[in-house]
Length: 60
Image 1: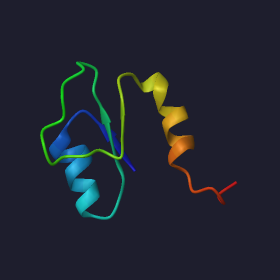
Image 2: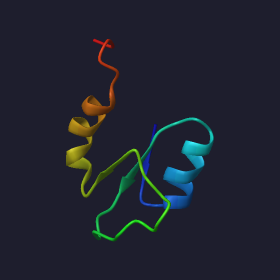
Image 3: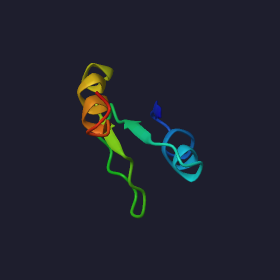
């Protein structure tokens, strides 16, 4: 799982490696066509809720 504001380094790269990429989008920018983060947050405060939502149902 990667979290960051760089689409190339924190979303695309991890996804190509089979990991999840969460976009930190503080500026509220639109994602370019063809790119789809696994999740998006505008502040790190939102991250725990997103991480719980991404957990597999049988993980606890």
